[in-house]
Length: 248
Image (tube, helix red, strand yellow):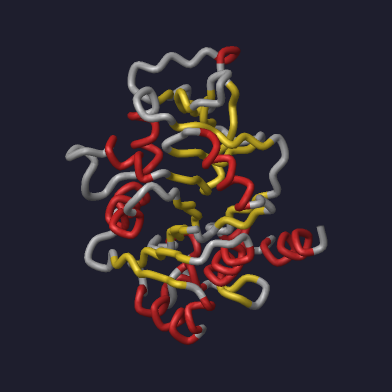
């Protein structure tokens, strides 16, 4: 099974830690964040991983070499010349995902108790072009799924902003879930990018613009233990969070 890890971010919320290292190598419980994600993927049966790099990217390359690629086949998608955001990053790496085999995409700064193999198998059986892991948790911004668990839109409850353009948010018509930063994509999704979606763009903008053409579904969890460690206040909680996951 194949996967991609987003490790190219600037990590601006974690300054000054990221003044001299990439966010992916910031330590949590004695190991770099990236190592935790790689090992989780390996434990669930993923054998080939693409990692995109930008900020201090050479440090990530050296880290992988020093650890013998963790016994996996690891490719580098080099964005050091231009940071492409999540959507552009996936498009740039598409040559690694030829054929029909889906691939899992995982933000480097996400820790969770999700069974990645179950998510991947769900996608295989769903017929979706993409399947987004989302959970029932408190936030201002929600993905909106119809009764068939298909992505229909997005809303910011604080501002009232809704996407895509022209979408009318009706509270009782949709299931409201928060995105996890983990999703599974089939190569069939690339056909919807065409010549329009190029360069730098967020994958969520693409999902929301194309969700009425592509089949973008949700793997919806009522309970999901998840921590976004991309900011200082949550990074401080990461050691305790991992300890709870490991003793579950």
